[in-house]
Image 1 (spheres, one colour):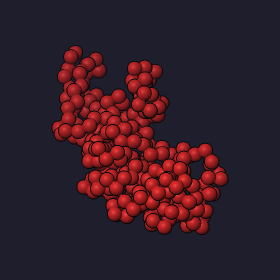
Image 2 (cartoon, rainbow, N blue to C red):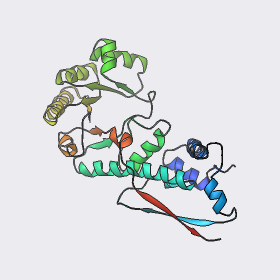
Image 3 (cartoon, one colour):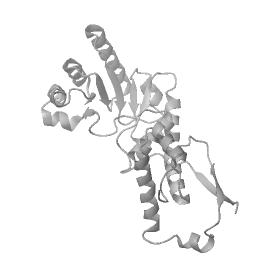
Image 4 (spheres, rainbow, N blue to C red):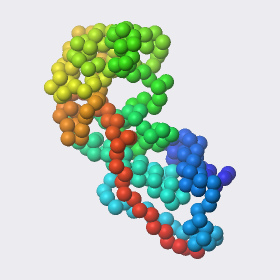
Length: 264
């Protein structure tokens, strides 16, 4: 056990939250080493006796949803992670509240900070959202560039299905004509890219007719150019998911402070 090792209790909480304790130890160690940069914490070493023990109290300076307490370690590392992750959780909770009662589910994307994906997606779950795929290998998302390279929507879907017939496959479309092609090809999850709500509503109707005629269920996901102000109107079109890249790449921090009370 070194200074960065997590306790058994904390490790169990991380596993329960879908996080790998070894990954978390690496994150904590790397952030602390980044702060020290090969040296020491000059101010703390000079002013704080080695034997001193204190109680740390975290307090938020705004309403929000807290995430990351189980990985808090060393003052600035703890605050950097807590503020960032809690900001993501708070933003997610706002989106979830905005679509409450519609049945639509808020999901994240892979637009995450390099090295922090698992933590940021954990924060989304803390805020009441759901995770999209964690990596390029656990699900396929056929986007416009893949469609161009493959020669069309149906061709792209068939090629991915031939390579990975057991993986979930989602295909992106930006017109109703492409949606129909994707449905005819056998897609069961379709991403509606940058469609206005009135077009999304028609897309929902098309997918419902397809299901009624074929018995093949289809899930629709809205993405692109969405704001929290338009979230409810999008959700009310009947789409199943709303994916929001901004949850992980643009959420402001939740302002959290730390105060120490010396006990020894």
